[in-house]
Length: 249
Image 1: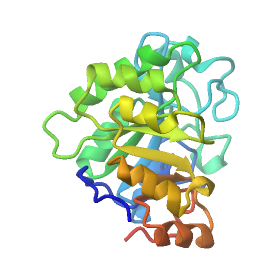
Image 2: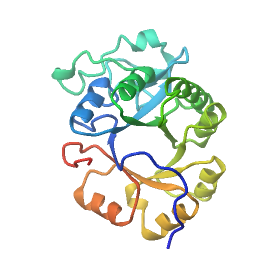
Image 3: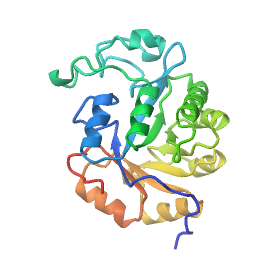
Image 4: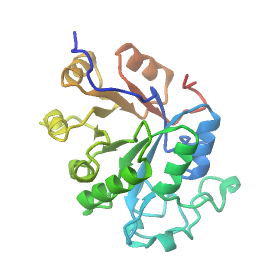
């Protein structure tokens, strides 16, 4: 039997991936509004830094897939990023949707009583600095709020940066495949959770992570059978694209 959890956990089980999964252009305010309309109260987003050091929302290192821009997103200042169309690639209904700042999303979440998982997604080579700036920014934006966001990252250096500037905001290590020492690294970083590729979880790993006092979250869960397996294992969080399939209550 796993050890009882000691980490307070205020977050809902169901988390909408990049706002509303694939129903709206990912990481745009339109997506988060749509996810909220489906009843979701927690969202996952990706945050990186503009050339002038402002955290903004984008998954890829480059602009081509989800905007009409070109090249490395982090090479552009915020003013140039703000001119891009981040919606037309998805569908004509979302043409003209902007690339949002983390601050814009924070204001939406706080105003609507929503929770946020901020994946720190640095431009390669800027891991620690991105974590520091995202940490500073989130600490300022959520100051005085009862529940802070949850940071996560595949990059330990980014989590270390966030820990240095916002130690009070909880952190989670993202893992796509288990690697030697990954749980030790999560413990060293003071993580409160592991966020795994959902296929990695089994009873033994859940027990191992729980015994370390950490919570168990999964990405990206889009099938009913996978969700039921994770619920039966007693995991704590499910990140999904299928906001139209899974009722988050």
